[in-house]
Length: 139
Image (cartoon, rainbow, N blue to C red; front, side, top):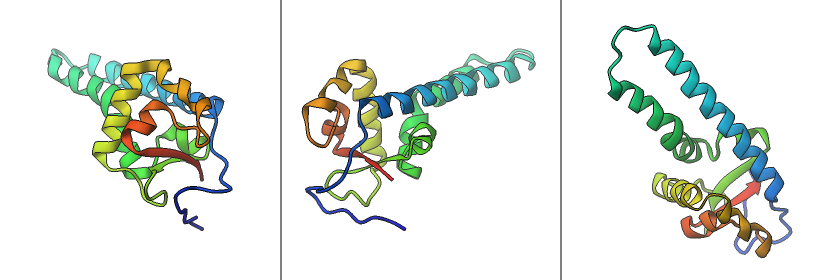
């Protein structure tokens, strides 16, 4: 059953820092597995062009999160921890690829600094959530 939210969100429990870090760690392990598996598979092919390795790296690092958030409302780590990424203005809607990409870019440019604002606001939004117009909710 889908929950329909109205903004401002009332009586909603938001995932805290620990839940979000756990999701990030799961995703980092998945990215490492994707990249390692692909590297092993292509190492058996003679003279694999560098651009193939580059594409695998780009997908593993730069496209995994925005694509999963746009298509599925969250990454594998988010789904395992039962959270989803939604639009702050319409929490029943997934973010678009632009918002997901901006969110990813800010999150990785600022690193852990981005997560510092989670404890500073009622909706537990990180800097990357605020700048991309997203919110993290429990499913």
